[in-house]
Amino acid sequence: MKPNASDVNVQTLLNEHPFSPFQWVIFALCFFIVLLDGFDTAAIGYIAPSLIKEWGVSKPALAPVLSAALFGLAAGALLAGPLADRLGRKTVLVGSVLIFAVACLASGFAPDLTTLSALRFVTGLGLGAAMPNAVTLMSEYCPDGRRATLTNAMFCGFPLGAAFGGFLAAWMIPNFGWRSVLILGGAVPLLLVLLLVVLLPDSVRYMVANGQPVERIRAVLARIAGPAVLKAKRFVLTETAAHSDAKSGIGVVLSAPYRVGSLMLWLAYFMGLVIFYALINWMPVLFKDAGIDPKTGTLIAALFPLGGVGAVFFGWLMDRFNANRIIATGYALTAVSIWAIGQAAGQVGWLVVVVFIAGTIMNTAQSSMPALAAAYYPTRGRATGVAWMLGIGRFGGIAGSFLVAELSARQLSFGDIFAVVAIPGIIATAALMLKEFKRPKGGDDSSARLVPVAAH
Image 1 (tube, rainbow, N blue to C red):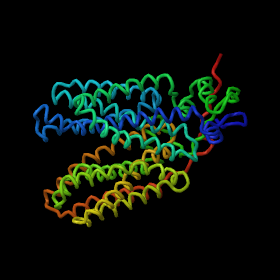
Image 2: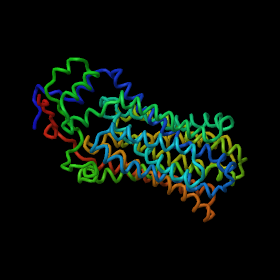
Image 3: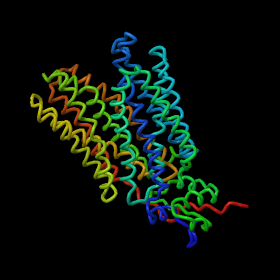
Image 4: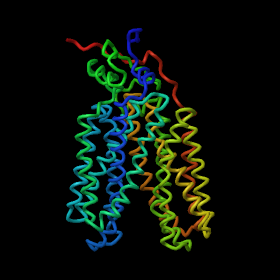
């Protein structure tokens, strides 16, 4: 059904009106979801030394606890994307925040490692489902010219939440014990659930694409563009993404126009997490083996995850230039800088600089990937597309942890280990360039979806 002159194009309306206070409320709610996601994801690492001391367990015995959330994160993302494309972004988002809030709160009362591992898996399910849906919902309320900037800015809540959690845990654990960190990590999201239920709308693009009542759509858009929207009789959603006949989110992601691009997004995100987890988990050990004082090595390694806020700058570039090439360039520079870390052994001053630069570039590129995925897919498959990239990518984190262990077992030198870890950056670069080369042609007005006036 073709749109006519009396139809209101939802994306055109978002593009032509200033970013409203209502949209800033949506941004803030999604930002805090991702911030709490970062806090709860990192919490187990902060309390691990206390668990070893209080329960008298060995470091290897903590492995199930530390990895449970990673598997939960992957499963939660893979399940939640298709659900959000079927049930709506808000429904799945509220449910996922509630799940990780309750599970994290219960973790604070866990009596043993087995119970804690099970609860961390459930926490991971909620965390894995929350992040991609927050990214999707936020992107669907953004004007085209600022989508990547705003989405990346929102995604910066994750590293900030993880870093803030470290400072807070350092104060809370000596004063209140390790359980207080998990209790706080559960109690605050429970309060956020109430705000989400009251203040957060569902995605207006989702509502249009799924033919929901026009009165509901008018009420939401009136809070962005004013009462003039209340006169609209119909709303049209014109997708700039290629048309797909698939009826489900998974069907869209794996359909012919998107199949290659989806595989390349998964590959790039997977490789990025191979690098991230390989270095986060092993840099202090590698620096120690290279003859650097353990305390100094730990402080240098802590510089690596600080650069995610640079994603705001990448978002600005992505809104103005070719986004695939921008992030591909980031991964290429990541490969060079990771290799340079391996050449800086014995030069502490140079090592500090290179690690910080590598972390800034790597985290900036990786944090920009959800915005890239959100812009790639049509509304019907967007939540699944973003969530599956994040979910499949999680296995890269698991692979990265084992990679350095294997390289060390083969007795590779310090420089050779970092040279191998740099290779995934090259693969990610190639994946995004292939995605750019094989990108589908955009849709036209014939793919627009009209919502008729609801019957009275």
